[in-house]
Every structure is written in structure tokens, then in C-alpha cells.
Length: 299
Ligand code: RIB
Image 1 (cartoon, rainbow, N blue to C red):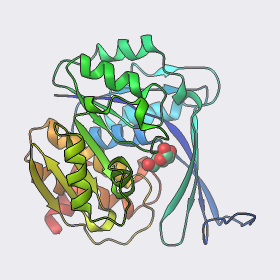
Image 2 (image 1 turned 120 degrees about the vertical axis):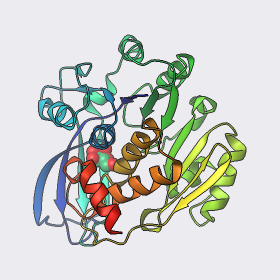
Image 3 (image 1 turned 135 degrees about the vertical axis):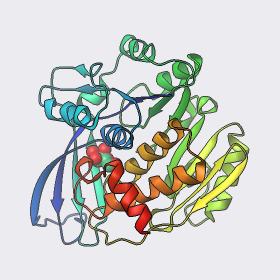
């Protein structure tokens, strides 16, 4: 089983700030770093570093060669990445003293996927493979629908959360990968609700889908083939939470591809995400498999 990831590739401009800028305020950043990022790129890098076979589908502009190189270095297949004119996607990220982030994404080349391109890439997968996608590219509706029609398992990380869900064929999604805010919105609830209630609501709405609900430092709960699983969070020094969720997604799906038990997939993904939050940046913070294994053995 392999992963075909239709995902964004962004140049992340990361500003270290004392606090997030408020309306009408001007603040000085302490540092500026450029990192490879994008939810799609991060998830491909994580899954490939975890040992899965990954094909990345997505688009870069004239300034995106380094983004493609990062995915290739992680071991994923980048030969299908589309090269467009104009700029690649980019993100403006504030990282506060507490390690929290606030992100603005500009789509750029990520919004240039055509129906022909999507079909060409889907033909690289075989029934039973996983098609992974987020919400930073265009044509999310087409990718979900056509992947389902190809007999592929659709794993969707609805981030950033869509403005209009009604246009999306969500009954064709096999696995939702959501954080607490996204899970609550998907379930028409609020983040104040008990995560178990969010999980139950999602089960009623999407009875044939699995749900992985990540809870930051509080760990994760998951509903898979009618059974509920959970794993506590790992306590680490938080440096930068950027890409923690992406690292979790990539490692979790890599575990599924290798036929690991769900408990083990959750533990490995949680450990990898914990390492990612203890480091700066998006893709550079994602551990390789041996680092994750050492961390897990020590905790
Ligand atoms: O999830 C983190 C990512 O979100 C960043 O790398 C940024 O590019 C945005 O896509």
C-alpha cells in the first residue's frame, strides 16, 4: 500500500515574535527564517521519513525547486510535481514565545491543479492505496470524488478548514484527520465539547469513515472500524508547534501502510509529533524513523 499525496508546497517565512500582532499594532520580529513547508509537503516528508512509499502530487512555481528537493531527499517520488509559472505557495508564520503559531497562507502554484493533472496522478495509484489531501490546493472536491471512484482510500486533513463544506463529497472520505477545532467544526459542535462527543457526532454523520482526532498536548483519540482508541500526549519542551499535526498525519498513515496495529500507529505518530514541536520550523523539524523509535523507547 502506498500514499499518493495531493498536497501544498510552501515557502514558510517564519517570524519569531514576543506576541502575535494585534489589529492596528506594528511589532518587530526578532528573527526571520525561511523554511520549506506547506501541509502537503510536510505530510509527504513525514510519511516518507517514517518509511512509507509516497508519491507527491502538487505544483510549484519558478521559485520552488528547493521545495521539491526536500520531498525527494526524504525519499518520496516527486517526478509528477507540476511546474507552473508565477510564484510557489508561501506562508507568513508568527511564532510566539510560547511556541504557538499563527499562519497566513498564499496559495500561488498550489491552486493550479487541473482536472487532467489530477487524473494523470490518480492513475499512478492502485485500488487500496491511500490518497491523502488537505485543503491548501484547489479541486479538493474533484480529488476526493475521483479518488473514491478509482477505489482508493481517501484520507482528508481539512486544514485550513473550508468555508463551505456543502460543496464537498464528504461521504466519499474514508479517514478524517482533524484537530480539536477542525473536528468540532466538522461535527457542527464547538471546541468546548468533550472530544468523545465530537468523535461520536462524526461517527453518526460519517458511519463508514474512520476519524483521528488530535488533541495537541493531550494526545489523540481515534475511531477505527467501530472501535475507539486513544493515546496520551508526550510532555516535551515546546519550541514551535508548526507542522506537528502534519507530522502526526504522515507518521500515522505510514503506520497504516505497513499494517501496524492502530495503537502502535497512534503511539508512533504522537512520538514523531512531539519531537517536531521541540524543534523550529516545518519540514526541518520532522524526525526520521530512528529518532522517533529512540524517543518512543525512552518514553
Ligand atoms: O501545518 C503547517 C504548515 O501550514 C506550514 O508549513 C505552512 O506552510 C502552512 O501550510
